[in-house]
Length: 218
Image 1 (tube, rainbow, N blue to C red):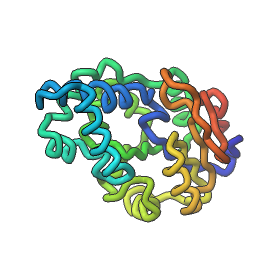
Image 2: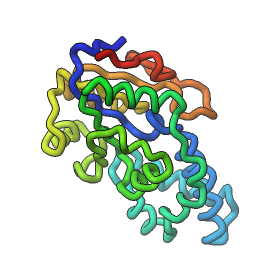
Image 3: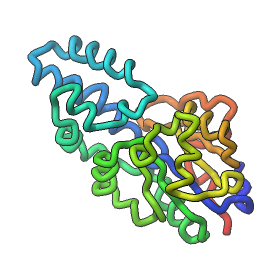
């Protein structure tokens, strides 16, 4: 599935790839509507409908991932609300062994996430997986979300890499399509990002349900 002899750099998404997406889905679809309803004196379903409309307007943009934007937009401290359910942040069980094997192989390992730096900090505090990485890069440093076609060239100014000798793993098909259009050498989709939800169709991309399927070779 992966030709490890042709890989020098491994770029890894965070949410839904290394971490269980259940936390994020629960936060945005359940916890946020409930707290938004309480703060603004609304019925929960009314709050959920309003938030869904907000989400849809900004989907695929950097605003969608920006906690400062949502705090201002919704008049709520989104970071504090995330901390209320931080106990749900979880590393996928197959991930530590995979990350350790990558470190042992000597390849450069970089987290590349759309998550806002404040969200990234919270999740690293909860999981302590930053020790496996050579670099942690938020799309907010790049100035574009990973879905944007210019993201990958801008990323190279921060984290130089040979696109043909790079593996990129993500659970988002729009992001994988963007990486493929740029010419990233090897792509891998995670088709079970949320442990509480059914597996999703990953289309034509090579896909895994566990990193045990693609453990690196030296």
